[in-house]
Image (cartoon, rainbow, N blue to C red; front, side, top):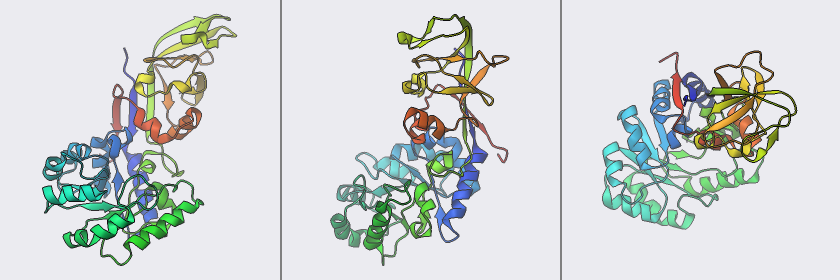
Length: 349
């Protein structure tokens, strides 16, 4: 079967990072969140491009991700692990020179016992109730951890994509209450937090989805183009149906293209009968159900059927597709499967 192509524009990723870096202000450093394999786009290519652009701090979710990334960045880059120091992580943290963000007294004890001289950061819970030390645990642990030397103290905003949400100011106030007066570097803002303004920036910002062309950074350049190969065409007569469950019936003589991709590749089944693929800027409706490896697309109105049709690209970005699917751009990107041939473009590289 023909292989679909996922094209990633590294210059666009870098341009988005630079734009968010400029919004972060001269006194604030800008890192890059490259967890989940750079949101499905390939951390081994994305992170070095960002390093060349000036990023020196990178965030991953797990120690395994950090260890896998290290050879592509070299020893100068600082790689923070958002999940902290979990059981069995000590060899990876030591050998890859990772910096775990300690989230609990248990992680603190584990890290200081196994790697007493290794660097670490701390994540605080300021109201999201997901990861991080709560206030009582932090107040008890802070004297010991501050004496050891904390690389970074961070928290995460729950509602930064809603600028007027009262939770933003509440978490900002709580973060300041928990950390003001301490001689530590601080970080609160991911992409949405950067856009909230300088009160949220502190010493380090952590853009993630904005690097990859997604909301809430509306000015972001598109990064990904997903081109899916046409492997067969057929003519469907009026009254005939297409795909599983007979969910679409032709009302006219219809030229139908069968496309080599499906829900095994992260194309959500909910998109059945409700989205378009594109030949340039011409929409071609997806007809019938998304199946595991195949889509069926109405190409009747094209003068010529191309070799590929785009599901994601200039005519339909990740957020537009996410809106149709009733989800968010993060889920669209991170669901893109391993069968795509990932092709990278970078003029500067």
